[in-house]
Length: 334
Image (cartoon, rainbow, N blue to C red; front, side):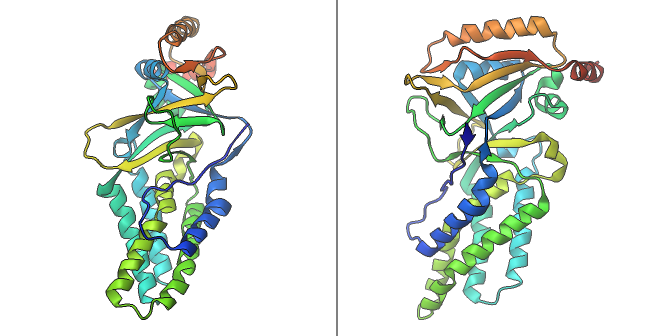
């Protein structure tokens, strides 16, 4: 089993520059996407309370929260801040007027995307299914549940259960915590895309200034996709222990009031059955173990019988958090 990350296009400009596209693809394939691939069995854990656990299993979906409502509202602003700093550093090395227009347009379009053109929805997972900080922040202070999901190349995602597909706007990415790595990735990406369009600028010298500026801005729209992913996956160092991965949806703002959106998860089995990739449920450390195990097992059996095109597997493990965590949380809760 393994998971291979794929690139996503958020905004597809009408006029594209082929050599810019090739430079973007080269960077993504060689430097960006390998960071979000995984060799071996990838199981990620989502912490929630009882209502969340029941709703996830019943609907066969994970609910994404509007990034503006994340516990740490500075998360995306941190990513944008790293990108902004790298862009200013790269600008200081540049003298070509229209390269500078391109760089400024890149930052403008990226900030506009998050500010008022698109909405970012995030569902968070951890590689650790029994982590104190996650129980405290998301697992109802130890009274909740940690749900394990297996992600592989056969895991499909759809935003519409009536139209089974794998839409490109739903992506799975590993969160990166090292700020030097973050800045290095942005600088490398900028160098790649800037050098790819330099020959175009030479060939366009005969054009009017306004036309050259418009072309630079259009290319910035084409080039901002990977930077948008970076903004959503860069996080400050102090959260490294979370080992977070994120399911991310960046969709056009239709002025809806919904702060959450569902993503339905399933595997296609050899028998053409759609199976929910839930592998385990861990009972929180502040809950009575055996009674809660029994209640969760009965709930899963009950919900498995509900009518749904996505079926629940028969090998879901129901376990309890470690006794060490239990005593720790009994102390915290009391």
